[in-house]
Image (cartoon, rainbow over all chains, first blue to last red; front, side):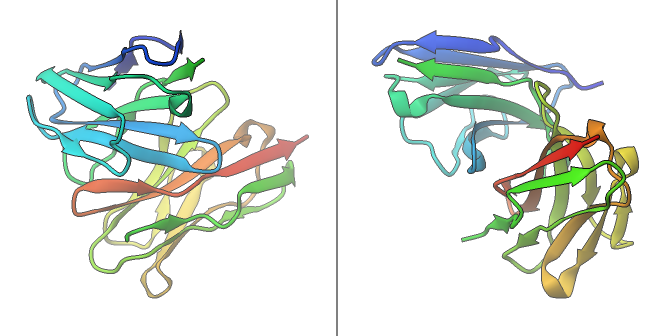
Amino acid sequence: DVKVTQSSRYLVKRTGEKVFLECVQDMDHENMFWYRQDPGLGLRLIYFSYDVKMKEKGDIPEGYSVSREKKERFSLILESASTNQTSMYLCASTTGGGNEQFFGPGTRLTVL
Amino acid sequence: AQSVSQHNHHVILSEAASLELGCNYSYGGTVNLFWYVQYPGQHLQLLLKYFSGDPLVKGIKGFEAEFIKSKFSFNLRKPSVQWSDTAEYFCAAYNTDKLIFGTGTRLQVFP
């Protein structure tokens, strides 16, 4: 069974703080993704990565950056958190291309 | 821009009622299609997928979906829903390099 884990289920931060969200997958998947999920907006892609040290912008990359130093780990960074980044953040991984993506449990981030 | 539309935002049904959730995608050519489900408090999981072949695909828990290329549609169906089907359902389409998700449909099933 593929397992995607995220470092925190709930996180509360203050405006201006730097925030790190960690994601780890255990199935040697090449591709990893970060989404944010908001009511009425579905899932929107922030960044994705096809390989170690590679990253591609998704649809809403502003205010975020990512890091992929190891194949199994993909980190999302909020350089200076703002209240409009309060959301549910989902990590996913896949073997590649149009195959099924496997999702982590999500991190509900609140920025005060 | 490529997009996926789910026109039903909130559906309320009684147990044993039939379900059909609409999904339309905006682009032609080869496309992989998915339905994901998110039960309350749980992570997103795959219900079913279509890559090619038989346009009627069957998934877990009695769900099925039909790919109609001429209508750019991939509607989800279940003949008789149960209370445990209460969840949010997302349609998604893969083209070129990423998955595009619809905005989701919240299904509530009452006993």
